[in-house]
Image (cartoon, rainbow, N blue to C red; front, side, top):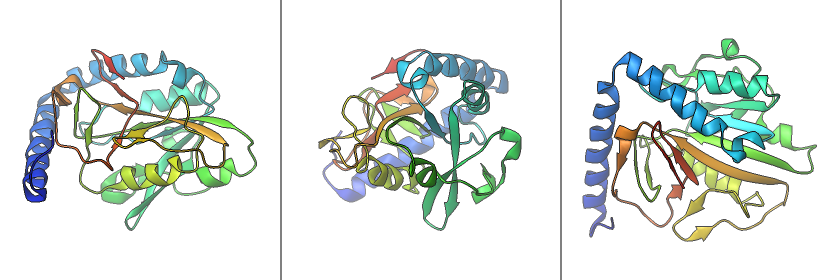
Length: 222
């Protein structure tokens, strides 16, 4: 959905974000729990999860799709697991070994205290497969995404994907797949969402980062 003016697009994104979050918040606690179990199962059945050496995941907050059980599963599966820590307008991922190690940070969202960053972890590795699990407010069936308005994931992914091999499994923009950089990692992005957050079409711009997968309790958009 390409809208004529920038102001119209901003207004429409704001409207759809509010509508999607209202739908998400209206789910009962039990519904969110059941749907999150199904979403985790759908995600962990994907080859991009099973083959991943590292999982970078958001830490669920309020009515978001729960990521705690997925993170614990990834830890049990021997994967290196990282969560974001926000400093100012930037976000970096740090490794953690138990969800109990996370503490309240930006806007009360649980974060790692610090320690080994993903960049540092990658320094002495020749090649890795990386799965990034990202949140969002609204999505459409072409995998366009409306975030929460802070731009944290768009900025982080643009930087990361420019350094990745990104051939067969990577996030994409409308302009196409990011090119090869250091040929040291292949990155796959998967957004986790409830079915009620999916619209037929939402506003998008050419520079927006689309996840390769959108995983819901009902289906996997790819």
